[in-house]
Amino acid sequence: MKKLLFLISIVAFTSCKKSYLESPSLGSLAAENFWKTESDALLGIHAIYDALQDRIQYSGNLNGFAAAGFPMYDCFGDNVFNATGWLFVGPGNYMLGNVDPNYQLFQTLWGSLYRGIGRANLAIENIQKMPETAITAQKKNQLLAQAYFLRGLFYSHIAVYYVEAPLVLKVQTLEEALVPKNSYQEISDQVVKDLKFAADNLPVSYPAAQYGYATKGAALGILARFYLYNKDYQGVLDATSTLLTLGYSLNGNYAQLFTEAGESSKEIIFAVRFNQDVSSNNELFSATFLTIPRVESAPMKNLVNEYYCTDGKPITTSPLYNPVSPGLNRDPRCGATIYFPGDIFLTDLNRAFTGNTATKFGQRKYVRRAASSTGIAVSSPGGQDFIVLRYADVLLMRAEAFLETNQLLNVYPLINQVRARVSMPSIESVEGSGLSQTALRAIVRRERRVELAIEGLRFFDLKRWGTMQAAFQAVVADAVPGYAPTYRGLKSETFPIPVTELNVNNKLVQNTPWQ
Image (cartoon, rainbow, N blue to C red; front, side, top):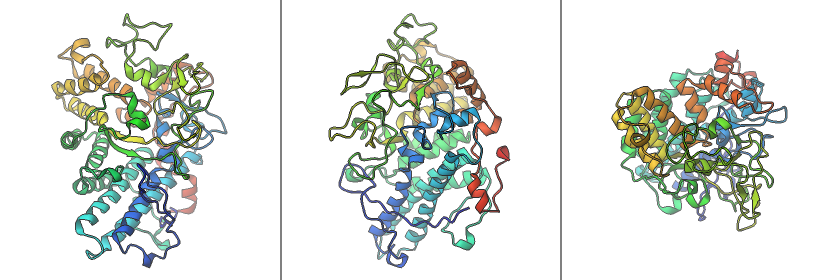
């Protein structure tokens, strides 16, 4: 593995409403002159947050000519189409099986995650050494907790996508840089350990000027998500039980959540923040073209069909469904997520979507609808925050944990709460009461799909449910011209260790599915 001692381009919060951005690089400072004050420690923490804003992580891209970030990870599965071909380095080629360990996406993501991990290790080691004359014990634990939270988040991605990889928990010297990979269990145990420390030491909230830092709720929520991935349902219930008491609530306007107007909502537990007016801003996941809404991430037909009509019935049985106007009388989350032909997608130009994507549907969730008030074009870097975790997800995780521990009566009110926010009927009023675990499982999984569509979590869900192959079959059945994904077993559920890493580290062995 490449040496994980990085020169840190430090970025700092400014007085603007959101940003880890806009302070000089401190890479030129000698190490002995840094880590001396609380301000130094805070800058070191900001450098870790900065890794989240990499294009391959949360700032994303507009087209397929650069590797897709997490906002496009619904393209790994049956929710969203992604363009393919030798010029494209996104999920579409992965779905087709046209990738190997040389694929740029695998290499770029690996490098970004370990860059963040390296920065976290650097901060942890140095902040721990700082005396109380430089920083109070309380502030030290709070900053360390942020570093542990971020390291846990980075390693959770390593665990889900790469499964086995080096577990590096210290700043490496050149002599220590070549290390073997660790097992999934070892990585998983460390993720839980890091997130528990973070949850124990992070505050519930911060002053408004510091909005964006990880909180106790963020640590508990990511911990619950990782427990859910590992099928530790009691862990999910324990973590989410505390989360219910921390003051979060559902936003009354679902569509508003995914716009800049919704960024201070009490539903948001943790988001990666961006500021449109900062010159070095990278945010492109909300960008779009003038003639077509995000052509490289078009919702699949099978996703669109999952949204019920407003009577709570599927389009196959509801009298409200009109195939001539399929967007009418649908669950409000459908119109907030998807453009149908004829919908206005650029409000300042009054420009309608013509259905000119591969699937005939367009992505609306998160996508900008007009140039900014300061003249920033819709295709230029913007200022939309990406929500990593929100309260609706917590309710759905808790519902799934109750379901899988056969506490079925506790499932209904949680799903009903999520539905009520968009004025959709309760389970009892449509599907009935006293349902079997199997029937409720289908409801919980569908609810999770339509609530969280195009938020980068579909691959995570399909993999842990064991339904990835069925998802590939659903995509094939949609019959998008030239797009026929091939399920390749674990190669379609994991990423390989990049060849570049194997070439520089003779102690690394390729993960089994990719050997």
